[in-house]
Image (cartoon, rainbow, N blue to C red; front, side):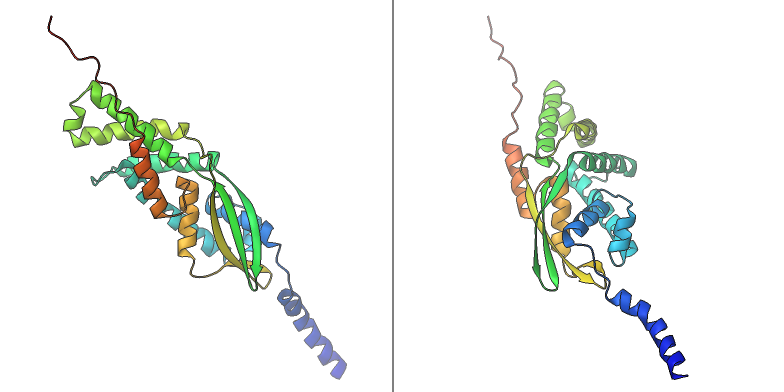
Length: 241
C-alpha cells in the first residue's frame, strides 16, 4: 500500500519538478524574439513559448506602438491643428512599413548580474532628421513658387502631408547606431522583462523610429536638421534699364 501511495506521489510531482527545473534558452537567443515581436510585429511561436505572459506583452506592444505612432505623426506634422484620422493612419502606416523595411539591429552584448541579464541592442534606426530636412526643403520650394501657401495654414498642412507621404518610402536608415540596454530575467524556463523599464522601452521605440535614444537627443537632432535646410534662391533681382 505504501509503495502504491509513493508511486502516486512521484507520478504527480515529477511533471511539476521537471517544469520547475526547465531551463530557458540563452538570453542572446531570447533578445531578438522580443524585438521581432515589439517592433517588427512578427507572429512567432518562439516568442510565445519562450516569454512569460507573451499574449499580454503582445497586446501591450500593440497599444504602445499605436500610441507612439499617433503622437509621432502629430509631431512629424508639427501642427496643433486636428489631423484627419484617415490621413494620420496612412502616414503612421507608411512610417511603420518603412521602419520595418530599412532598420536593423544587433545584439552587441549580454551581461549578467544575477538574476538579471542586461541586453544591449545596437540599432540603425529610421533617418527621421533626414526626412524632416527634405520635407522642409521641399515645402519652402513650393512656398517660393506659390506664396499663397504660406498665408493659409490649411494649405501648409496639406502640402506638408503630401510631401511626407512621398518622402517616407524614400527614407533609409541612419548610418550611425544607437545603443539601448534592456533588462531581462529568467523565471521557470521563460524570460520576462524586468519591471520598471518604461524609459528603456521608450528608448527602443525612439531608436528604431528616430535613430536616437531619448527626447533630448531627438530635440537636438531636430534643431540641427533645421539649420541644414537651405533657403531656396529667390532668383536674380530685377533691375531697371
